[in-house]
Image 1 (tube, rainbow, N blue to C red):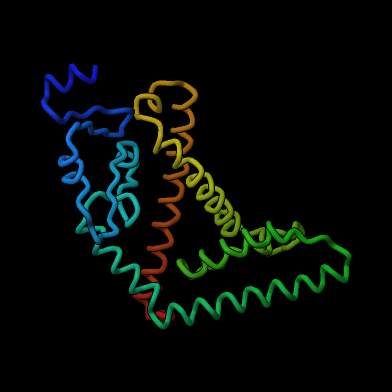
Image 2: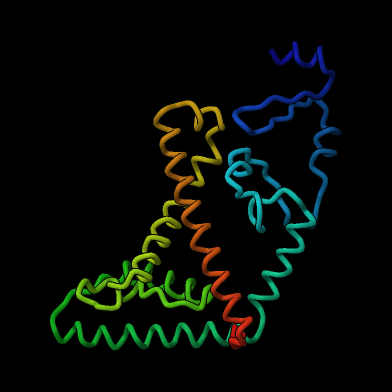
Length: 225
């Protein structure tokens, strides 16, 4: 098979395994040309399933260098701004103080404390608050009798967190499985459909958050981060 392709195409030929492209050559000079040194951090990876699901955007999965460079600069400037860093520190301090007060009460009442679970909720709380300016009360959800977690808005935020978690778990399947398997094999097709519902849920919630924040800014809300 190797010799047949070399005779047919010359010194270099290619084939696909799933959606991954593999290039075969028998000349070292060709290898050097394929692997020219680059100082750029841009590493485009084309994944058909990501494109169909609308995930080939942002700075992670895009294959367009110009868009990647532009969005990367925007993210770096936003994360390194003084207002954002100051707001991040204040956010972490306030949330930790709030949790610390709860710990003291729970210790007095003899309640057990799961630090690993608290860390997950705390990180999600900080990330959500810094990106959306909305409290989600993930940390408060560790207490089943906490009245803060009974509202519909808070329950929606829990659905968002669960959908986000499932989304990151599913990325491996989209990377390593070709579209044919995800479309026509029953078990994998059901999994793909579940992932698509999760992505649609995440998109709807994020769009609503953006529209709400946009309206607040138009009405004169302070840009404190």
